Image (cartoon, rainbow, N blue to C red; front, side, top):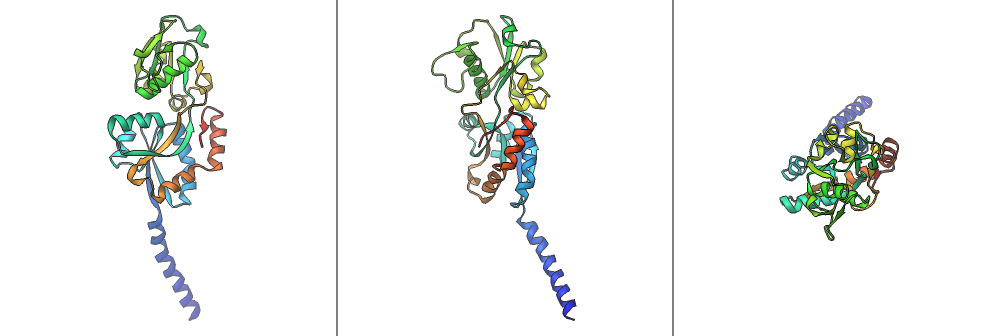
Length: 262
């Protein structure tokens, strides 16, 4: 009798424990861009699961919709942008979203399907850059840093082609969607391509003919709504990302093309 009661008690305990455990698991929808951001968060999933978080990744092909979706409550978080880009989006669109943790840095590159070095790019060539102020400005700052152009003083992080004051090679700067820059390589002499889009297009990041130094404010971030920033799941998510396992994965998988930023 005692044995049967013990078995029954154990069965009842298990029956009640299962729903309780299920209730403790919280689903977190995270907007990501294809490529490294998605790959890294796939590796974060099992770590986060141990903290009661089920991460559901939703991929976006551009840099605008993920913030719109987050602000609208269609996501709990996103992971695709750097702080200057987020700041610009918040300022221009009034989003109530904030960064809560650093992720990785993608040194920006200028790539070419026609020339193996920048010196080989002819005068008067067309160069594609991103058409959003932050990433396009970043591309122009890279060209200035490498001595290709000179910009007005005091342009900050968001210069535009109108701010170019010296252009010795008489380059034609063409602004297009960031997600389309890799596809533009067949039509231009060179293009500034964010590393995540380069990886997604099977372009080796180390093949860039000009490459940004891994410095400055361009470390990417995880963003959430302001109302959520102090919730326990946010802390658990960041702790799951900022682990030795993830840092090791980034180093081994991307071999310097993507750098851990925490």
